[in-house]
Length: 187
Image 1 (cartoon, rainbow, N blue to C red):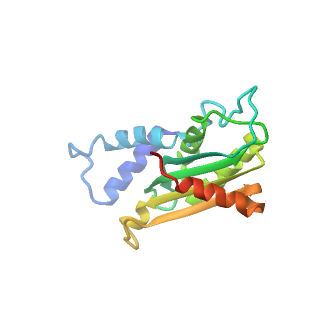
Image 2: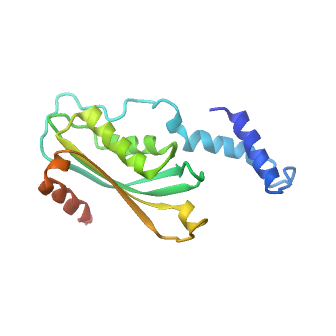
Image 3: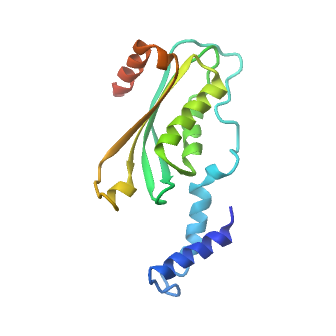
């Protein structure tokens, strides 16, 4: 990422909206924004470690569900945040992954300008590529600030997307089992 270009762009926006770029509260804003971009757009750089690296020596073939994974992303259309929860299920064909790897992977994929539909599909495809399971299902529920604070101005509207692969696509009872399991609330 190019910090100088980010800072120049922020200066242009501030000038464009009529802000005094020499004002005390504003003068360091371009530097703060460039630092923030390095953090929230880390998905634009190669991952620091393998995403969804299978655990050696483990074998499992029953459904694994990880739900209510919080994430934050930036809408590529308006550069405003969208955030929510991801729910995933996969049926291993022997290969499993460490549970913390799943939230780490969604965080990485969400850390770039995104649309929710693509984020959902990328996550499902990554699971299929790395773990080679019998199937997987990803559901993402998100609140988009581009719908809440501008345009239609409907705060609290939730968008739900899903990506269904393998046995979850072909076997309705498997899909229904996953949907029932994500409805269950922890005690």
